[in-house]
Length: 289
Image (tube, rainbow, N blue to C red; front, side, top):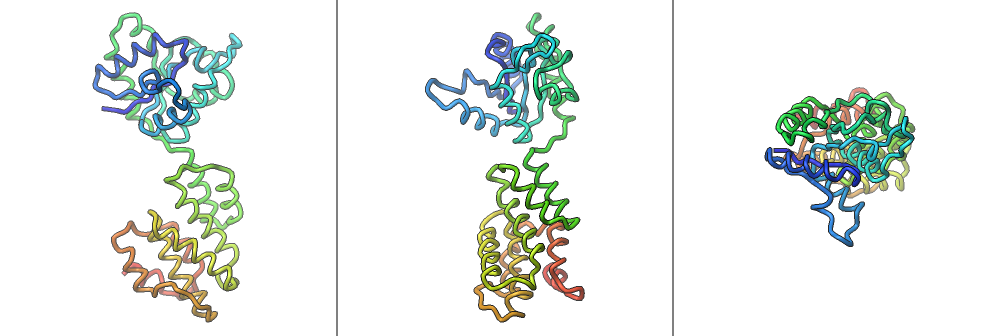
């Protein structure tokens, strides 16, 4: 059973209703606007909530939804927004071909978006009323799609910049995008470690060290707890103690034990963080044992 979001133009409502019935008959859950949005409710908020709840984005591709360059028909603004939200949230996307628009050329950015996607022709099924083959094809196609959200694509690009030492570009890339809440702790960690590497741990004054400490302490209450604790231990041993700065950071053993039940620090973050350490340091080894 899949959770499916159906995107369509209201001008294709009859076809949409039939396809919804076919998907539900096969045991799938379908987020369908007429059934989910009541009068007076916020359309945009409801749509994004619906997309967040689903794993598969099925689009009824027609001149009404994605537009048609040859016929000079503009795409539906609502459908275009839904496509971008699905991309942002990393949903697998499958277009259902209602006419030749997806072949001859969708309008605007939709043409580029769908040019490589595998579409499914549903015209015959709409005429016959037999949707079982189409549903099977939708699920089979979805099983062969690998996708990443836009958030993860931006994060991974920033991580690559971080690893190769382009710290300014790493921070700049993260500042150009608005991330979903679940990614924010990871984004903040990348930004912090990029700025710390750019400044250099030996060059921090007490005010700067305290600011980094405060931010890493806050991240200990998130899924980045292990990474944050690792950085706090580095700050304590290689910034505060050598410079004689007063601090409230726990000792190495306490920090290490505090995240024993958490997911270990990501290898690439440890690799980058270890650039802050002296060449002969055993810090990383002692943290892992």
